[in-house]
Image 1 (cartoon, rainbow, N blue to C red):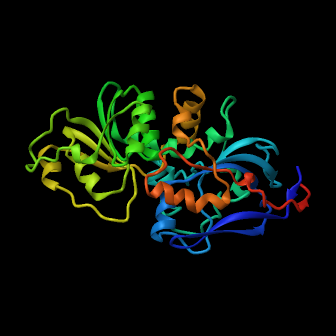
Image 2 (cartoon, rainbow, N blue to C red):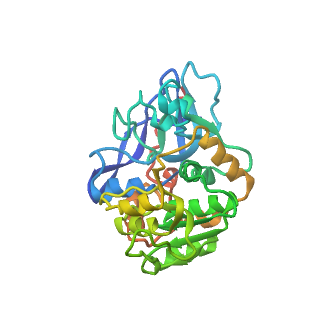
Image 3 (spheres, one colour):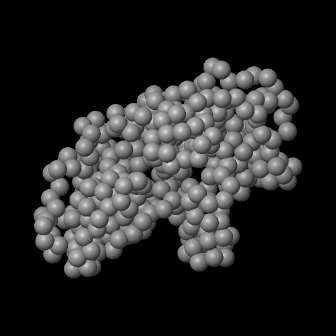
Length: 357
């Protein structure tokens, strides 16, 4: 496999500015592989980075990716050039409290979000990945579908921490790409009574296609007294929008002893009705990233055919030059499903080669 010496990457400069520039193709270290990126999904975090300035200038985003191994380091024995893989599966120290609890994404030795040196993301033609962070794409799953693995693992983790059981009732606030994945994953889990609150008409329509009952946010009742329970209260609430108003409304949809799961990030902070939590003994928790083995579980679910992937992935892929426009459209709620960046569709990708490592 001929590997170029240079590649195209989409670089975040400042809020509202992403440019495509040429950089050198990195060589893998002894325990690394070089991945030719096939598809990389745009995450809600990418919206906060680009539109709200949460990112580091001159960084390259993109962490929901799948591709083909183009080169391997000298100590890599489990992978071969040409293998189709998903990158980013979490590995922890295995010793700390979080790792022992099956939460390697929260490894105490590796630090939390934003700590340490960040790798270049997958809004690029190629990406370096530790061989330990790879998972093989199963037969029958395309690389485009496999790029759903990371956000689907997030949705599965949210279901895990909620404790929801088949035939129980759920409410989801926010029907963007992650909300749609959560709806589909809940249905695969046996939860088919799902109420979704979403302001954008196109997203409400897409959520209905995936299998939810849909309402506009103003239709959700928020009782003035904390001990008042709404009709058709839910066993679990999943907040996927990151908006304070949605957070308040979602909390009010729970039955007594219900569980509230914060899934979406947001820059504005919510105010909580602590009396509603107290008087109804509600469980409130976050769902940060994945279960241990979450990538394997997500790929198994994708391979099962139980998910309507054609409704979960936007029909139009974008080249690197389309990253900013796609993020802006997602921010306005104009696109509903997961938008995939396909770097190698970029006609300006360099073809100046070097030999395979």
